Each structure stands twice: as structure tokens, then as C-alpha cells.
Image 1 (tube, one colour):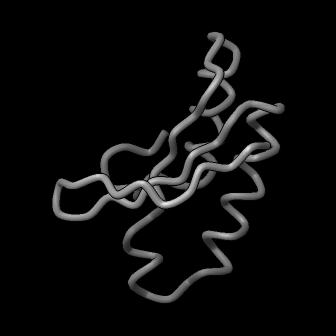
Image 2 (tube, rainbow, N blue to C red):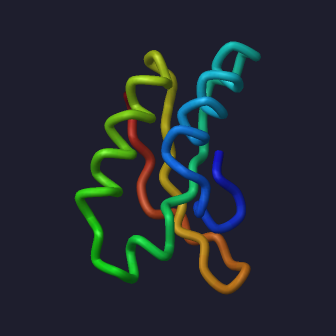
Length: 79
């Protein structure tokens, strides 16, 4: 969800998440918005994470941080 740079709006990420869950996904990878991280807007990231957790409906949610074409696994969360 939100590949490759996580720049999609939270609303789009929520819609993408709901779609993949409905399609049968057991794990959802989402990309943290690198621009918001670099700007220090961690409340935005926290809100986005809460909304995506809700959309996951008990599935595993994994946060990824994409920078310079390399995916760095940050944390795997059991929701």
C-alpha cells in the first residue's frame, strides 16, 4: 500500500488496504510517507497508522520506509 514512496494520501492508503483485505491478503505492507518523516510530522504518521490498523481487520500490518529505491523493513506489527 502506498508504494513506492508512501506519498499517497491517508484516505487512498485506507482504500487500498480495504481492497487488499477483501481480496484475501493476510499481510499488508505499507510505505510510510518519507516526506512527512523528513518534515518531522510524526502525528500525521501516527494517525495514518491508526487508520490503516483499523482497515486491516486483524491482519498483519508491516510498515516500510522507502528511500532511494531501497526498502528498509522497520517493524512488523500484529494487529
